[in-house]
Every structure is written in C-alpha cells, then in structure tokens.
Image (tube, rainbow, N blue to C red; front, side, top):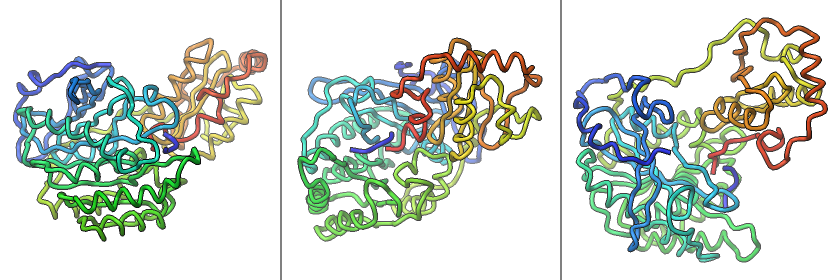
Length: 425
C-alpha cells in the first residue's frame, strides 16, 4: 500500500468536428468559453468519460486528454496507485504533468480509475497477500479500457502503450502477460504494492509476482525506479526485475537519481519530467512510437508577481495569528511548486508539490475559513496585491484567529497534514 497520495459526458462528436492536426506544431488551446474550460483543462481538451468494464459493464471514471483534431492519435493509458484508506475516497487521478508531455507529442491520454476507486462503479477487489493475483485482477480494468479505446475513431489502435505508477505499474506488467493487439510497450513507474499490515512478506510476494509475469510476458517494458523511492527502493527493484527477466520477461531497468524527498512521487511533480523523460523517449523510439513535439500546449495561467513584500518577509503576511506566522515560516521550507492562502478572518493553509497546489490551497482554506481566501504567495514570490494591511486591521484578524477552534488534525487546514503531494502514490 502506498502513501501519499464531474463531467462524465463523452465529447467524441465535438472533438471529431475539430480541424485535423497538421504535421507542424499548432496551438493546443480552446477558448475560455468552451464548455469544459471552467472545470477541466481546456488546453488539452480534458474531459471525463465512462468506460464499461467486466461482465456487468461496471463504469470506470476515465479522464481523457487529447490534441485538437479528429485523429487518429496514438494512445497512452496511464494507471494509478492506491492511497491509504478506502479506495472510494481516492480522488480522480489525472497525471496532468505526464499527460501534457504526451499530448505535446500528439498522443491521446486515458487515465481510468479502476473498480471501486473514486467515482468508478463496482467494488475494490483485494486479493490480500497474493500479489500475483492482485496484479492480474487490476489488469482486467486496463484491458477493458484498451478495448474501449480501440472502438474510438480518434484512437490509432495499432499504436498504443500502457504505463502505470505504483499499484498501476504492477497491474501494467501483469497486463503484459496477455495478447494485447496494438500495444507496443509497457512503462512501469515504481511498480508494486505495499502491505504494512504484517499479514505477509509482501516484498517476497512481489518478487514472486514479477517472476510469474515474466514467464508469460508478451510485451517489452521499461522499468523506472528512483534511488530514494520510499516504498520500492533499489534493492527491492533489482530483485523484482531480476525475477522478471530471469523468467523470460523483456524489460530494461533504469535506476533514476534521487528525486526531492521521495522519488515515489516523481510523476506527480511538475519537475519530474526532467528525470524520467529521456529514458522514456529512448524506449518509445525502440518500439516505434512517436517522440517529436507536434502540439504547443500553453503553460497554465498563474497569478502575477507583485511588489507587496519579499516572500520571506513573514511579518508582511496579513491577517495571521502567531500560529499562522509559524505555519508560514514552515511553509518557506517546503518544495516548489507550493502555494499559501489566507483570509481576512485569519484562516490560512498551504499546499506543496503535486497537481495544482494553488487550487488545493485555496479550496482547503476557503472550506475552513469564515471569509473567502486568497493566494498570498506562490513558489518563491508574493502574489498579494492589496495595499499594506493597517496594523489595527491585522491585529483584529489575528485576535480572531487566536480564538478560533483548533483545526481538525485530519484535514489539510492543519499544516501538519497539508504537506506533500496528493497524487504521489
């Protein structure tokens, strides 16, 4: 088990009506008035569909990104890991940073939430300590996603790859034991499943699982594991890969350098691309998949830097109590991307790493505050644009904050739990 970590209408008809993608790079942008722009990322035509899976046609909540045009596009299916706790409470995975890399290269991207996860139907199917069976069970939903993709006119069913992170990596390699028309390769990002319940020797079970998959493997694979992965470190990664290759599986293991605090969160990080892309592109070329950038995806909009104060001027942050100022001092030690939000009633929170820390900080702060929250700083600069707060006003807000009930320690409003990526499984 790993640590850290709606729109459902299919838009195929409208997408097919868009202009064909030319051979040279084009702008990948829709107007802000586009129907998905207010809730999803219009720059990459992000939308959510329901993919049928299993004999009962359980519906899988599946995020789709794709270039403008009718296609057909090569496809990558990216598969998620597992958060602690109930899978139904796990949020929809997007793998936004990885998806943008592939959309720029002309790919469509599908990210299915498997049965029992997030808003997908069905129940989470757990085979306990039988890691081999766990991988095969989760692979069934990936296979259903591929079958659905082949039926779409905007997908090139002869050029597909499957990737997975953590539990999704285990499932992707398990999937490779089957005949997969059109699937040219598998990418395993820190694949595995951890069990801290003391029920079994989960590491040995993982080694046995990969040996089983290797004996039946039909698709070449790339394995990427970081030196400081907190779940599946270099020794275990080597054992798993040796078991797979020794049984006959075709897979190249790459030990990536240490990444920030924990390489297990590599795909969730804005900065991860610099670490995993080179080996991934080499693998894509080896299996005859495109790597050239053909689409221009504009950078996400970000609030402008202001001259209100230096980011490390703790006394300048408005409305904070002493507890809030201690939290802001702690925030300054966090890694980028990061964001800090405050409200006039003394509320505050911060978010670090992962997807959209700006939005996460604002949403959590607003949910816990008596007044609307606004961003104060992002990364290493201030975005607050009001006049300097009058001392009496700031003192009143600080006094209000001082008598507010203590934050629930189980929420992100408490800085002890707002740290880290929400998608780094």
